[in-house]
Length: 354
Image (cartoon, rainbow, N blue to C red; front, side):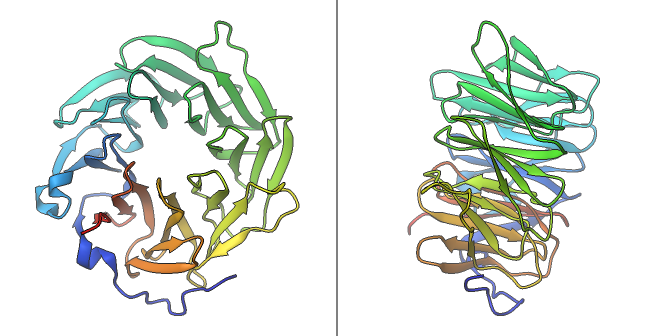
């Protein structure tokens, strides 16, 4: 491992000088930034969404609270529209939270809506949500069902590719890859025995990776279906993300940030690189900066670090001592970082040049 932070007590960092923090009821299940980078949303296990507008990023008292679901919010994603968000809950509802905070019902079924995703190029868009074995695709307005995709078991994760042409879903014994606009819906099945718990797709469409129940990752090279196994974690990988260029798959699941190379023939036969961590403290969440080769890492003791993957430099964002980091996201323009914890702390750090 390279350059672990020497002390468990990471000094307070950017949050004190450039951020704002606030306590909420219930643990934080997710956070996301809107497509226009003007807002952050934080979802809670109590059914609330906390909205922070850019002009109020430094004033936590001004952040607005909306009760959106009658129960825990299980999923949160930016809307296909520039300023809003989509939420799914254990009340079996899919809802939209508009830029003005207005809450709209989009769907209500009989199963929990555990995953939501959207894609947009600014001119057109698609939204998707998963309930049980089904993934439903709707138009950007959320009112017209385009198609319903059936899977062999409960869907554990969904992701669009970068161009919005394909959507992938993880489930028991593998993953399924669908073309969004196909006239005949025949999935490409990617088989691997076991329970798959999350999914990521390479930004260049070269590979698909799932997290496994058994502290492993499994991947498929999409050009030929070749299997890729990435193992050696001391804990289950709960978070992973490809770097901006697709050069690295950045993951939690260890007491450092583990990065698998997706270049030079990797990751097959290539050892992962590791960024600084905290000895004995598992990294729970990772997020990749959308502009620079910088990684945000959130740990089980509440510590958050910003790490420069190329220069091996570490910048503390938040010291430890609180609940585990349960949510972490950059704004699309890279000028802000939002986070949430299991003990109900939410925060935003302004990363813009001053």
